[in-house]
Length: 448
Image (cartoon, rainbow, N blue to C red; front, side, top):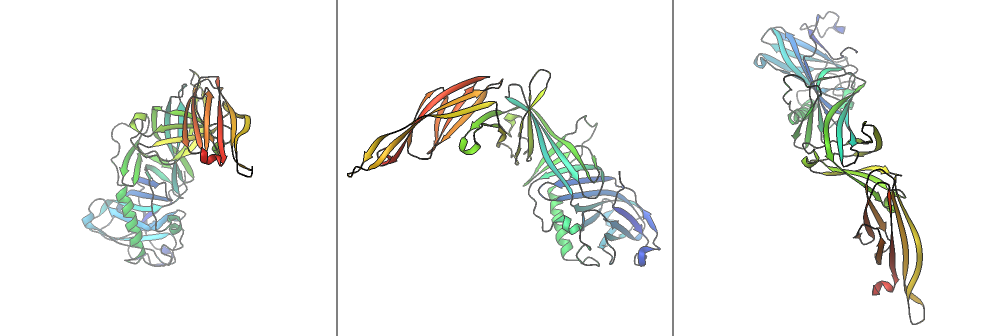
């Protein structure tokens, strides 16, 4: 693992201005005591809270901070004493001219020794996304739903033993953090930071983010074998805190568990509609994010779900399909499109076509007529489980009548030009039904 790039150094007062810092006496500070990452998924943004124990002397101290080769936004840097704050004055942060990737805090201390401080800043290059694995029971009536998050660190910085927190929600940024991090100088020009202006705007925005994602209590006692995620609502945001700490080096991704819900009731439905889906039925899987469905404690972040099915008593799995979905609020239904299938077949066929009931004007010209089409629908379930099938037929007119015969199941007129058949198919079974469609044209529309 590579060395930590952010360096903290105590400098002897008055020597910083000497060329090249050649005669400066440097004292390396100890490593991080604590680190907390709050990663937003709607923006390239992470809030870092870094706890360290600084060794200060009475009087004036200078603390050097370098962010070379990272994506840290230097305009967001802040330091706060965690003890003896009344005796420690952090009175400015300067960016020396002609020196890249370097800031210097000027500190006046009334005490000597170690002082715990928290350094906070924003960085880009750290992201997370959710993905899920669903395992259907053999009868496909319930599903075990396991959620994961994958955290990817491309920030240029290693973060060791960091508490990881994930934010779901929309963040509005004045600037892109990555662009601020790549500036040659923090404010687009060399020199000290002005007391008022751009830095205050960035710091105010960062404090708002910190207020919205205040630290949650850490887990105490013996760590369980399996990590859990604590979840908490934050107005328009939602916060997920992963139990324990994680080491995430730059250039690495790490998969972390989110939740594991067993016995989630689900509905499998096959839909056939040539206008929307083409010539093959499409499989849909639906459930609800509520307590009845063993969920509902928190929103479910959007992601990709891969669905498998247990096919025997040895727990062997078959792959059933996958679907991406957006953020699912509590008490909301979700219907996932798992794609077209071949093991459920629908075959519509035109069996007969004729015209009838012509009307004529005084000159003997045709002014209206009926068209009668008879279709036969064959359906087949080749699977070893029962399935629900929904067939929709679309017409090119609003003026029609329909007669059904055979095993057509439940029938309803969905709208002016669409009808729906709902069928239950036993394992390895088939059904056939017919419908006769009469459409009215010309003056026959008026008489219908």
